[in-house]
Amino acid sequence: MILDMRLRGYSESTIESYTDCMTRLTKEYMISPLKLRPKQVYDFFIKLKENKASESYLRIFYSAVTLFYKIENKSYMTKSIHLPKRVQRIPAVMNKSEVKLFLSECRSLQERTVFSILYSSGIRGSELINLKIPDIDFERKTIFISKSKTRKQRYTILSDQAANLLKNYIITYQPKDFLFYGFRDKSSHVSMRWLQASFQRIVKRAGITKKVQVHTFRHSFATHLMETGNNLIYIQKLLGHTFLSSTLLYLHADSSTFLKTISPLESISLKHIGSFGNQQQRSFDFAI
Image (cartoon, rainbow, N blue to C red):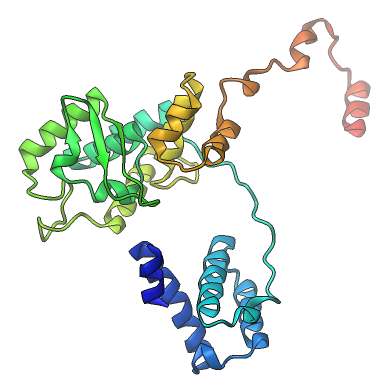
């Protein structure tokens, strides 16, 4: 299965994730998954659901198991498993005041540089940690993404403020290979665990109550560009989306158009309506 995934061009993170899923299924019954019956696979998914497994985890697990049995010409093993339709969720977005507050709470040049680049360029966390020094072009104000989730190379923007921070960062930290290196080894990149943990610490210090994660900066980048009237195709290219439908999701979070519609209540002047007496107030409360 692992060899087949590599031949198909799956990313290493996906290969690891799918392998973990098959390992968990194997440990559940302590026999080879090739010896399982369809009912056992079905029951295992029921158990995952009863244990409150998230929708995204169930889908990853389903994809892993389906691929495994497809490779082994046993596609019938998963035919009885039906997952609910995917719910299209509107991504959480930080407004510009929250972004400014977040960046002001960064306590090191490294933190401020990392998160400024994430927000100003819209790149993924996994793309940021794989950046190397030659990927930055200060003259053209671009960032070259050589390793992306979709395995498609692309350029995105490098803002002036992010560029200034990055120049100071390079002078101070003197990276050799990876732009943001690990604490113990300059030849390896900083971990996603560090990125996520740092993000949550800063969110807490900033007092941001929204449910946000590192990827929220990417959502915020796209939404803020859309709100300022940027071309949808340009945003798609900057994000590296293969399909425009992926970019269209941000239309739901865009407050520049339909969310600025004036409510019909604004056309009614409440100040000319008399105040409630005690009896009127009780009647009004009862009606509500």
